[in-house]
Length: 186
Image 1: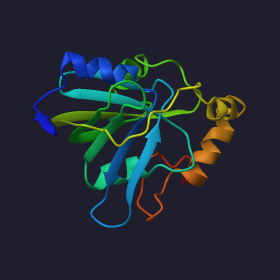
Image 2: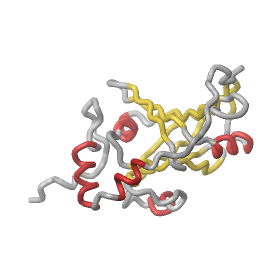
Image 3: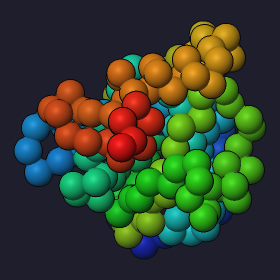
């Protein structure tokens, strides 16, 4: 049975910290809904009603584009090992980028990841648990390192160029808020 809670309990915090993968859902008022899988030790519980996750350079930047238009976010965790449980965190999120006042403090919470691009901070207004009894049991074999290896092989200029080509607009054409470093200065 689903339960709705006002905050993340110590028990649920421990569950979150034990997960190897989680999913982030966002949507703008129009366009496509986005659900992204995340991993790489990139999420921290900051308090009973706040979490943050470090986002790295990837093939898109849908979350950032959606939050500029509609700052709602859902983060979902599923127990793939142990007792069944699904946990959803609902709330309002914001983007913190390198150069922003909070960047250094938030980025310091995570292991240094090549290609770190943003931190998303979610203020949680609803916590929901449900049974998860239909979610399969799966064994964790290890993290994939492909994205870190790729990012570590790029120069800062190459990473910036990639972000300018792939991460400044969503698939629906919405701006993501990354600075346009290729703009011509007059």
